[in-house]
Length: 116
Image (cartoon, rainbow, N blue to C red; front, side):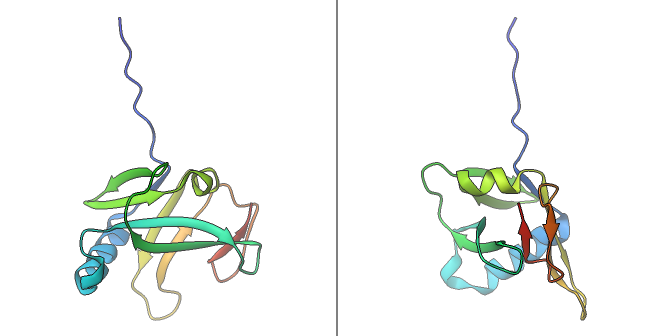
C-alpha cells in the first residue's frame, strides 16, 4: 500500500491578490513570462521586511500556483513565510498588498516589516 503526501504550499494568494499580480504582469512588458517572487530581507522598522518582484525560477526555489499566478520563494524566506496569506485591497487609504504572517512575533504599523 502506497501513500501519497501532498505538500502544503508555503504561502497562499487570495483571488484579489492574484488578479492584481496578473494586472501588473500585463502592464509590465519586461516581466512577460516571469513569476512572482515573494521574499524576506533584513530591514524595515521591525528588523525584517517583505519583498515582491517578478523573477525567474532559480535552483532551490519553491514554486506554487494560485488562481493562475505562479509564485516563487527561496529556501531561506520559506521558513519565515510559511503559512502567510497575501491579499490585495484596492482602497484609497490602507490599500495595497497585505501579508498576514502567523510567524511574526510583532509587525510594524506599515505592514511591510515584522520581527521573526
